[in-house]
Amino acid sequence: MAKTVSGKQLVKILTKHFGFQIASQKGSHIKLKKTLNNQTLVTIVPDHKELARGTLKNVLGLAHVDSHDFWRHT
Image (cartoon, rainbow, N blue to C red; front, side):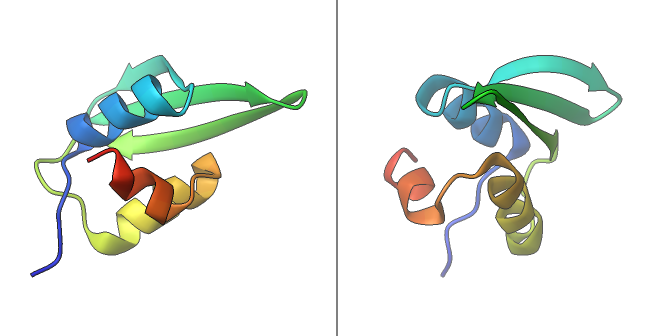
């Protein structure tokens, strides 16, 4: 069985371990920002109890976070 992660867990890991900050929240979507090499990375995390694998993959891609690095922090 594959691991799952909630939106809140994802936000917590991205802010604690990958340098993101919560920029805003609109409804159930949380916007995270990070400046890296004079470039601002922005990703949106849906605040769902369980994120679909494709959604998680897309969020991590926008955040420039390797999935193996991410799973080490879960």
